[in-house]
Length: 448
Ligand SMILES: Cc1ncc(COP(=O)(O)O)c(C=O)c1O
Image (cartoon, rainbow, N blue to C red; front, top):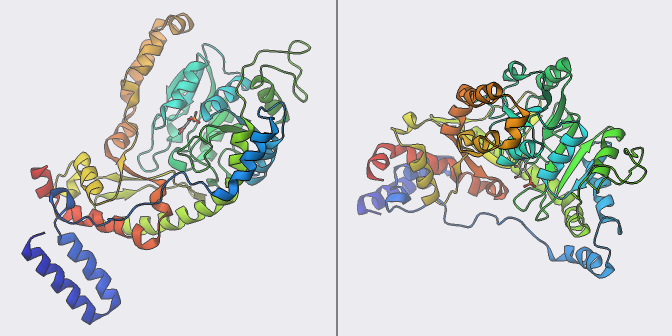
C-alpha cells in the first residue's frame, strides 16, 4: 500500500474515532473503497477463513459405528434408512419419503413412476446443474428447455405452456440455489394440460413457497444429499410425495422391482426396476444432521437478508426477486452484475478481484445446451429412432430462443452457502469489498 493511501486510511480512522461509532463504520467503508484493490497489490478486505463445509461432529460417530458393527449395512436389513425417511417426511410435511442413492436417481425413479417413457418430453429449467438434463436423457426423454426469468433466476412460468406438445409427460421446475420457483402458475399450467410436476428440489431443503416446503407441492419432489449440499452424506437422495400409489411404485422400482405396499407389479415377485437404494451409513449421517440443517438454514437466511439489504444499495448489483410469500435457503447466494455500473469492469475480472479481496465467488451456470451434451444425445441412434428429424431440428433451434437464460448466464455472480454461515461482521465485509472494486473499476479493467 502506498504512503498516500496509508495516510488517507489513518485520517479516515482518526476522524471516525472523534465522531463516534456509526460514523466510524461509514468512514471505514469509504476509506476501504478508496483502498488499493488486493488484485493489484492492496490489502484484502477479508483475511480470515470462511466456515469449512461439510462439518462433522465427533459425538455423531457412535451412530455410524453402530451400523458398522451391526453388519446390517444394506436397506433390506437394519432400520436407519426407514427412520430417516420418516423423519425427513415429517420435517417437510410430506406424507411419504423414499431415500435413494442420489438426487439423480431420485429424479430417474420419480420420472419412471410418473410414466415418463422413451420418446416423451419433459419441460425443465435450463438454469440448473447438468444432472437435471441428464436424468431426463437417461429416461430417453427429451429435456425441453423453458426460459429463465432474469429477475428470479428460476423458470419463467409464462414460458412453459408454449413448449407443451402431445409428447409432454412432465414439467420439472428446479428450485435452483434453494430459491423457490413460482409454483402456483406452474401447477396451473401443468394441471390444465394433464402433465405431471416433478420438483427438482436437489438444492432446496426447507425452502418454502406459500407455507409449503419445496418438494411437497408437485406430484413428487426430489432431493440430493451429495457432499456439498446443506444436508450431506457424501451421496444420497430422496423422493417426497403424498401419493401412496406413487411412493409404493417408487419403492418397488428403486429396489429391483420387488413388490412394495399396494404395488405388486406385473408378476408375483419382481417387476421392472433397478438398484437405487440408500445405505444405512448414509441415513445415520443424515439423521444426525437434521437439527443442524434447521439451525444453519436460519443463520443463512438471516445473513442473506442482511446482505440483500446492503447489495440493493449498490448500483449495478441486482439481488434476486423471490416469489411472493416464499423463503429461500441459499445453496448459493446469487446476484446479477452490471459491468457498466462498474466502469466497464468485465464480470470475470470482478470475480477475480473479489477473490483477491478474500471473498470467493463464481459465475452461475453457463449456456450448457451449447456445450455438446444435448447434441450428442439427439444425434444418438436411440433419439433418432424415437423422434422425427424435424422435431430434433426444431428442438435444437429452440435453444436460440432462451433470451432470459442467456442474460442470466452472462451476468450472474454467486457466493457459496458457507459464507452465509459466518458471523455478521464477516458477512458485512462482502458489500464493502464490492464497493472497493467498484471505486476502481476502470483502473482494474485496464490493468488486469
Ligand atoms: C439441481 C440439481 N439437480 C440434480 C442434482 C443431482 O443430485 P446428485 O448429485 O445427488 O445426483 C443436483 C446435484 O448437484 C442438483 O444440484
